[in-house]
Length: 493
Image (cartoon, rainbow, N blue to C red; front, side, top):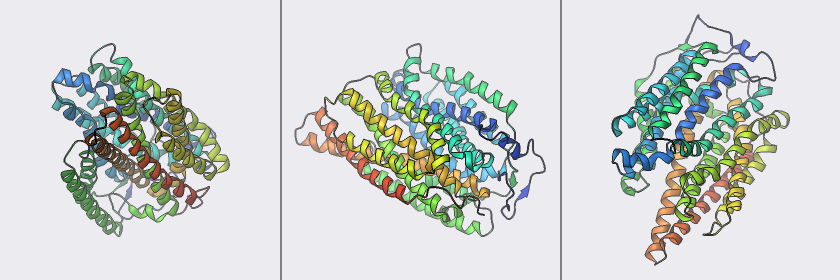
C-alpha cells in the first residue's frame, strides 16, 4: 500500500485502477479515530491475546498429549519463529495488496489456525495450527501500523497510537489470567473454542465495513530475498531460543549462521534498492529519528521481555504462586499500561515526545533497579508497585517512540518502516529472553555447585538477570535523550 497523500511510487510499480474508497475519507472527522483503525485495533487485540493465552495450558497439554515440557514449549518457539520469518516479507506484501486483501489474509489464516488447533488430534497438528495462526498475526501488526500512518493526520497520531498501545499492551497482560479462568471450565481445547467465534465475528464485521486505503503497487518479488529473510531471521530467533536448556555451542552456531544469512539478505536489499524493488527497503534507516527510535525500542523490548519472563518465574518457582495468581498479580501493571495509552497519546500531540520518553526511560531503569533487590520475602505490594512502574514507564515510552519513528519515514515507505519495526521487536524479544534465561541458569548452577539451596540459587540467578536488564535500561535512557520532540522531517520524500 502507498500513502494517502500524493507520493512518487517506486520504480517498476504500477498503480491499481480500483479502490473501494479514497484514503482521505478515512481521515474525515478530525479528533476521532478513523473506523478503519478501530476495526484493525480490535482484530489485533484478539490475535495478540492469542499469543499469551497458551501459557497456563502447558501442563494440561503435557498430560493430554503425553509430551515433555521441552516439546510443549515448541508451541511458543514455533510461533516466534514464524513471526520472525514472515514479518520481513510484509513490507513488500502490504504495498502489493489492498487493505481488504491484507485483512482477509491475516484474519483468514488466524481463523484457520484457530479452528485447526481446537480439533487437533496430535501435537504435530497443533504445532502446525499455531504456525498458521502466527502467519496471520505477523501480517496484522504491520498492517495496523502502516494504515494508521496513512489515514491519521500528523496532529492526531499520538492520540490514535495511544489507543493502539491500549490494545497491544492489555491483550498480553490479560492472556494468562483469561486462560487460567477458562481452564477451570474445561480442557485446553476450550481456549481455541472460545477465541474462534469471537475472531469470526470480528472478521465478519471488519469485512462489512473495511474500506481500502491507498493504492496497491504491483511489483515482482525476489524469492532469494524471501528465502534469506526467513532463514536469517528465523534462524536467529531459533538459535536464541536454544540457549534455554540446550547445548550453548550448538545454539551459538545457529545464531552465527542466522546473522551471516541476515548479512546476505541486507546486501541483497541494498542491491535491489537501485532497481526500486527490495523486499525490505532499508532506506528508512537513513532517517536519524527512525533509527534512534528503533534502537530505543529494541533495547526497551529486551529489558521488558526479560522482566516479563523473570517475574512469573520468581513468583511461581521461588514464592510458590500458581499461574492464575501470578497472572492476577501482574495484570494491574498491564492494564495500567494500556489504559494510559490514550492519555500518553494526547500529551504527545500537545507537547511532543521528549517530555514523555525521557521520564519514561528513567522510570524503566528505576523499576528494573528495584527488581534487582528481590528477596524470598519481598512484600507482594512492592512487587506489584515495581511492575506497575515498569508498565506505566513503558506506556510513556512506546507510544511516542513508535509515532516519532514512523513519522520520520517518507510516506511511500511506511509499510517497510512498520515491517522493520515489527521484525526488530521479534528479534529483540528473542535476544532478551535468551539473555536472561542463560544468565539466570548459569548463575543458579554456580551457586548450587557452591552448596547453596536450590531456592536461594534460583533467586541469585534471577537477581543477576535483573541486574543485566537494569544495565540495558541505561541504553534506553541514552537513546531517549537523542530523540527529538517532533518528527520534523515526517513529510519528506
